[in-house]
Image (cartoon, rainbow, N blue to C red; front, top):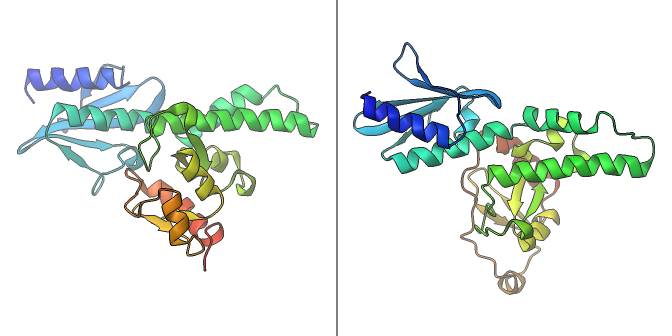
Length: 239
């Protein structure tokens, strides 16, 4: 790694939220860290690909193969680091700690008080999804945050713990019409993110809704799969 290559990586890291000074480990990889989360991202230069990236937690890297991503430009490195930092900041343990901090002194005796606490959790969950999906509908790419809906994959009421309820991997950021379809069990997604449409939704209705069978979710991780499997089994409308 030349001094210029190191400077480029360090600048990208700082711009993407890894504000601690990187160090080179014994394997010649730059360790990128932040004070806001414990996970570590490792970057190094290796021909013929410009940059290679791994992480202490594989789910930080959505499109990794065998735990590693290779990119050939600094712009692509920025995208990978931005996504990794966003995931690290929104991991369940991070969001749950925020939830505990904000609600530890709130009463929960009455139904109204419990609803207030639930609303705090839902707002944290929505903010986490906005960061994880970079403020865009994960299917259509719609980038108007005020219109986007934070959709639980495994419904809030059926989650068994705050860790599940506030897990960013238990959520999809969707445009309003897709949120309504997903919430009602009319659509689902495969492990690969491909759109699945209930047979109960007619071709005419699909056309009226402007649906495309080419819609899909990119950047799904292995951490999404358990929730999606639950949804297909328990929430998706089958024939």
